[in-house]
Each structure stands twice: as structure tokens, then as C-alpha cells.
Image 1: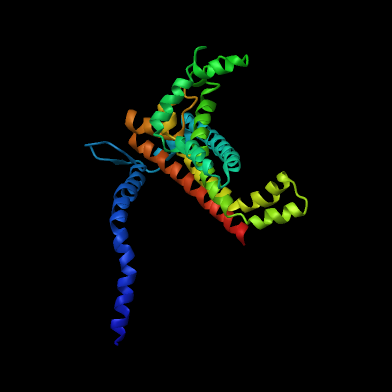
Image 2: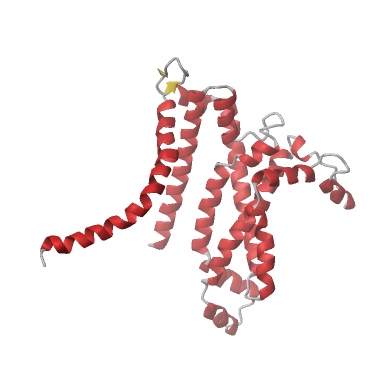
Length: 296
């Protein structure tokens, strides 16, 4: 058998996976990479449809970084991302610990709990808009009234609108985190629970010294995904408040949307998108570096 005859099957075997991936890669490149490259180009131009773009250098970035509205949107985005990330992971952990097990009825409860994640965001927003009705006859205000609280304006108040959106994000994100934590709990060595119980460790000490260390990689993944999800939040804010009242819930994505599609300042909007992209990439690399240091 010649050397060429031996190499050809290896070459064909190496190309086969890429041929299967090629359609998806072409679609991904057309709808992800090409728009991303175009956004980078637009961020250095004053975009003038039908008149030709004009080079402005880094002026768009200067406008974005010196804009008070952009600074406020960054702050709202960070507060929302931190609150939703911490809240959804904590609530997801509690749900996972309560619903862990192999009992037949638990799969039905887990499915019911997971439903908010698969429901369309538009439906979720409309349901919560009804729940958040600001009058005394609103559903949540009626519940608060039983305890002598409220009524609250929820989405209509500068003081409570951001926290109200945060609660919706936690409610929708916690089931997703719960499923990942459940998968992580299945990988924790059960013999460690038995050994710690023999040594006299109570439930909380087993949770602290066995469960949490076993879930550390899961927490890193959840933290990364939830933080990126929080930085890119758009639909919930757009549908519930669209940045109102008086900009108190304006986040980066809604501001970029308004700059590009309402004020037709596409160059500045593209610069804001690139800044958000850089923040997301930096966060991802920082988590990966921290994870790499932790494993060495």
C-alpha cells in the first residue's frame, strides 16, 4: 500500500466533520461575523445612508464615553446584571436542593418550575405587566395589602422600576440555573456525604464542605452565562418600560437601540455596541483566566 493511499482516508476523515459543519458555519458567518465587522467599520464613520459614510475616527467613541445618558445606562446595566445574576443563582440553588432526587413526582414539579424559561419573553412581560398594575386593585398590590403594605407603583416609579424588572429577570432565570445546578449535583460523589455523616457532620456542614466545593465549576459557568445575559438584557426592559420612567431603567441595549433606530445615529450606536462587546469579551476572558488559575 502506498503512502498516498494511507493518507487519503485520513484526509477524508478529517474533512468529513467540517463538511457537515459547513452550512451552519456559513449561516453563522453571514448573520454574526459579517454584521460584527460592519459594526466595527460603522463605529469609525458618520453613517449617512445614500450619501456615503464619512470617516470620523474615534469621535463616536468619544461621544459615547462622555455621554451622561450612556454612563447612566452603564450603571443601570451593571446593577441589573449583578442583581439578576446573584438572585437567579441563589434562587436556582434553593430550588435545586429542594427538588433534587429520583422520586417520580419530582420530574413533574421540575418541569412546571422550568416553564418560565421556555415561555416567550413577550408573554412573560405582559403577564408581569398585569401583575404589576399600580392601582390598589392590582394583583400584587392586593397581596401586599393583606400584610398592610403598598400599594406600590412598581414599573411607574423611578424608585421601584429597576428592582421590578430585576425581579422578573430572577423569576425567569432561576429555573435555567436550577437545571444546571441539578446536573452538577448529580456529579457530586455520594460517598463523601456518607463519610461526612459518619464523622458527625450535620446537614449544613455537609452542604458547606461537600456540596458547595463539588458545585464550584458549575457556579463558574453559571456566573459567566448569567453575567453575559445580564449585560445584554434588552427584551424585558424594552417591553416593560422601554427605559422609562425618566430614564431610570435605561440600559445599554435599549439606549443603543434608540440611538440607531429612533435617532438614526448609527455610527454612535455601533460604537456603543462595540464597547458592550469589549466589556463582554473582557468579562469572559477574566472568568476563564480566574478558572485557569484555580485549577492549577
